[in-house]
Image (cartoon, rainbow, N blue to C red; front, side):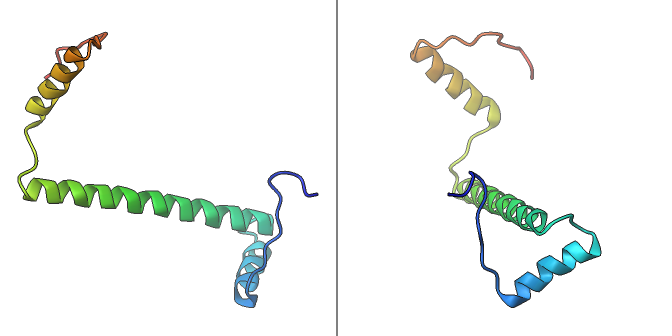
Length: 95
């Protein structure tokens, strides 16, 4: 049984060459580093895509008239928290 965090993967010849070339160039110390970096970049891209989608939904809501000024929104949130008996510790009077 392999230790946790270790796995075996199969790459196409083109991807294998890309990984080996990166290591041979000295860009990365090992093939594992190349794969880890690729996965981190993929994860970041996925999170950015999710953020873009959320922004698109927000912009569409504004365009459809489903928005309110920030002061009104915060007052609404504060009112709802008060109705639920949730106190707001450390309230600030920032404007």
